[in-house]
Image (cartoon, rainbow, N blue to C red; front, side, top):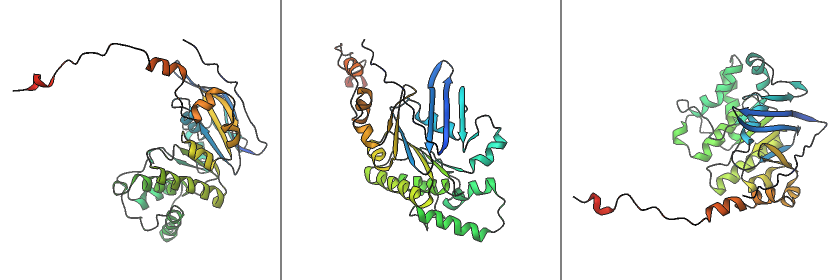
Length: 285
């Protein structure tokens, strides 16, 4: 079987990078997920990480906040190495981050207000609840959901749950916002609502944004920079036009949603259809 040539790994660094990984390698048992990646995230910009399922996108973003620790390599935030810190030391570091999980990860037993207050209570002793109520109101207003404070997640649509989770992610006024597949499971209109919120928060809060997605419409709309992973390595790195016109077939195959030649050959292989074990008459009385 023909093996598709792997593009060369590329890296791009910025002198004002707020987040960076150096020679980041992650293995789960014998499975190599990230293969010596070096990457710097520019402050105040939106970096989008794309790539096929299983290429290491979510694993990479979880390393940025040290939800996972590298097998080899280093992770830095504002020039401070953080992958070797204890969980106690990481508590303070993580207050600078907001994370929107793929499914939203709201607590079903808590209402919207309580979900947004949760990270505040984890990191601060609340003395003025009136001030907290105003903060929650302001965060919900930013995502267009002020008035939903007493709703529970089960009564919300998928798009509304994502927006509540985003309000929670900005509760501590983070410097960095990390999004893991923010438009997954949403229709095109609700997906574009999330895209507009990503742009709004980056613009109004001045946050550094990292988005993991396989949604190319979203990537082209929100990204200042797009990084593509393939087989655990960076294979393309640049702005939207650079990615659209990238010469390597691996990149073009992904951004255009085309099945690879090897996979297509397997799907087109001739074979004998198996006979059914049972027929409808077998179930007749």
